[in-house]
Length: 422
Image 1 (tube, rainbow, N blue to C red):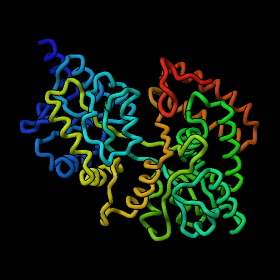
Image 2 (image 1 turned 45 degrees about the horizontal axis):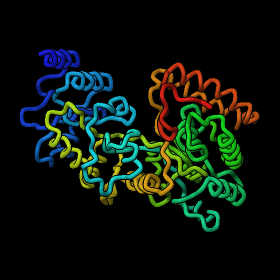
Image 3 (image 1 turned 90 degrees about the vertical axis):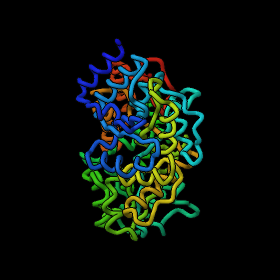
Image 4 (image 1 turned 45 degrees about the vertical axis):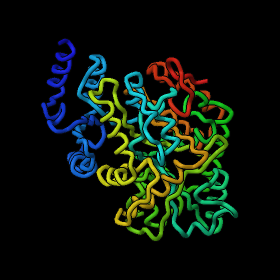
């Protein structure tokens, strides 16, 4: 009786109707923080999930109510939710309450994301569901200036620097562009791309000798970067004006260039450094809570959502990319086809080294980002000594991590308590 009261109170508190706690004919309640916009939720119900024979009731929720309800069901030991859908960071918080999915077929599923879904255990705590990320893009005119023997889909940072140098020398002006403006996503590049590629870390080795090397490499790249980059925010704009020919940005901030002139531009993976091809995926996973009313039916839904054709429909519904090997149909927008190929090459590379979005920082996320932005401005723009800046900024980073009490996330090794800054 007590557990029923908990669930009933929770349903009232979150505004859930009897429909939201499981439609009469739906065997699996799919409780998700993603596909919240009405048009996306409708597409999930009418298109993505329409082929699931057992029936599924898709119910999106904001993060707070989503977490509150599932925590209450787990505490009660029983509930209505069959499948959970949310970001990697949200699912970490529920690790002990997630069913092992190791018996589900993983054929074609991205191995890097499958490993993330183990959450540091020997069990498959969640299955990857969909992803978004940042990539490189280039005007095809730039390809003739690639370093000899370089593969644009497997570049190193040294090759990117050499490419940018040749472009500047041969065209008469810097042709590499970087979103360093006030609204640019530069901090994500340093956190999820540069640092994992040189330190295999985002936090612990922030002030390491390897980090010093990374910043010096970026300074070298900056010397061949268009100086207008300090005002750039959405790199699609500079690609379309031919102001720059090679750029880094989020897929959504490159879409207009790909769609307007698909024959002129390509997408390709971020470069690799000594510790791998660092990249920052926005990974969304699906898991089955231990309180699920029908674990077998829930696992069937996880399997269904992992099928290539369903992954394509999920892309259409949410604009998040597949996490399985799949050939995209010809009727997809050019931005999807171009970015999708780059994402597949990057996430499927043998040296893929994901640096996840920060986890557990709460309202300190802005200060965390500022550490990297301030380091960039002092080291690269102001020309200050790299070692001095890293020592100073490491103190600021350590205070943030200690105040948040946030454990480490990939690529840093798991920690007990706040992630250390060595």
